[in-house]
Image (cartoon, rainbow, N blue to C red):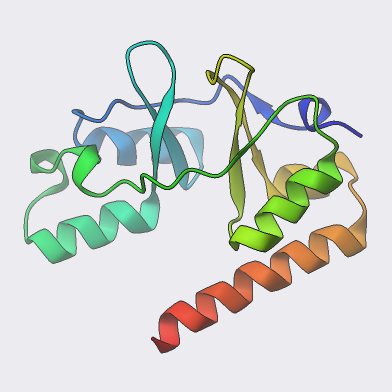
Length: 146
């Protein structure tokens, strides 16, 4: 099974100069916890999560509307390509300890998002999903203990 068969197409995005309020609004309206951050030509320059927004407001002591996405987003972006096998994408998630990957084309433009939830709903191999989820949980545990 290929990534393009189960990925979420046309995900909502935000720009680096927009506020965390805008990113949070997208997450609320789309019922998601992750928004790719793109530049003017559609290249992914980062990702922002609901946790990034919350911690950005907490650590900066400012309202979401006063904080640019670029100050809270992760610039370390993990990705896959639409034609890749889902098992390879799950290996990236497992290795990097992430629940979601941006999906980019060969021009490095955003074409979708792949989440562990997409893999579950798409019928990917249960063992591969369990291994990826285990690695994500281990990464979270290590970060919390640090």
